[in-house]
Image (cartoon, rainbow, N blue to C red):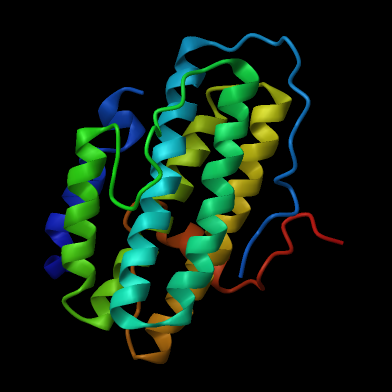
Length: 210
């Protein structure tokens, strides 16, 4: 995995902790938040997550166009649902949306903008590199969302976090399966290896769908 060290360090640099701060849609219906207030820390988490999910979408769109592999387009569609879902929460809470421009590769956070370029550069080296990029992004997403879940007890926010986490586990299964079919074993970078094994050795989740 040493070939991916620059990518891993770049991902660490923009994680919420560092900053201080198929399509899985079944649980992604609009919650009724009403006039509930939200702590500043959760506001930061939601704003970061909005762009983090867009980052995944944008990277997968770009790599899909480069490699013409359906997995990237399929998961990009799911990431669009995810980032839209976080936007709905931002709107419900009256939190300013950091995404003023939906174009691919455009971010309010300069570190995420740089990370987009690094991920795309890594992912265009080879198809294996592209799939490793995908697995690594989902690895980090799972870790970040788990940490965000520990910072709130708001039921509506947790419902969205759980839905996004479920989607990320399915995305991880898809990327790891693609790598395994090419004789490559992905090693966990952010979650534990046991967590990764538990994910990839269980079936794709329905994420609340009947």
